[in-house]
Structure formats: C-alpha cells, structure tokens
Picture (spheres, rainbow, N blue to C red):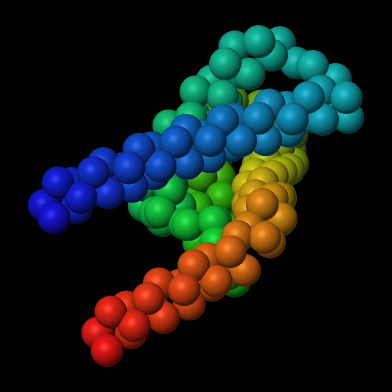
Length: 167
C-alpha cells in the first residue's frame, strides 16, 4: 500500500512538473508574440535586441514566480473550473505586474511602448493559457467518452460477482 502511495505521489509530481514546463513555454510564447506584435505596430528603437532578451528573461523568471505563487501546475485537467481559470488569470497578472517595473526602469525612454507591450503580454498569456486548458479538457472528454460505459459495466459485473461469492 505504501509503494502505491509513493508511486502515485511521484506521478503527481511528474505531472505537475510537466504542466509547469508547459505553462512556462506558453507564457514565453505569449511574451514573444507580444514583442512581435509590438514590432509591427511601432518602429524598433535602439537596443531592440537587448530589450527582447531582457523582456524574455524577465518573462521566464516572473512566470515561474507567478506559477509557483498561484499553483497553476496543480490544476488537474478534468477538474478545471472557473476558479482555476481565475488562478490562471491571477498568475498572468502577477507575471506582468512583476515584469513591468523591472523593464520600466531599464528602458525609461520607451514608456508608451512598454505599457502597450505589458497589456498585450498579459492578454496573450491569459488567452493562451486558458485556451490550452480548454483544448486539453475537450481532448480529455473526447478520449474518455467510451471509457465510462466500459468502467460502469466492469464495476457492475465486479459487484455482482462479489455478491454472488458472498451468498
């Protein structure tokens, strides 16, 4: 019994680690998409490459802090609800709130574009993280459509066999 618990805890930890890596990748993708969008809207400024590297580094660190703070890696796909979406939104907001002052003071001359970039990054992170969760829930439900009927019939047959052996 103890081995089963240990194995289950290890699997849960591995799953949480995978979800955290997935969230970090999605968050960095959202930050990169925001930078690309900003690049098309505004003219690049001097030191743009350094700014991009700084922005992505800050996004990685702040995303990690936000994910650990809100526990988004613990959101189980089949139990996701509005509260878990709220935790994802709060994690996205924490990421941007932590990133903004760091980048704001490093690049004081680009304040307008930084505000726009921060808002775009927040929205892209929120939409992408939520969209991935919703797609995963839909895939999970599609894969398990036939499983409940098989598991119910298995439970019924096991229960009837148990009753018959007790009689």
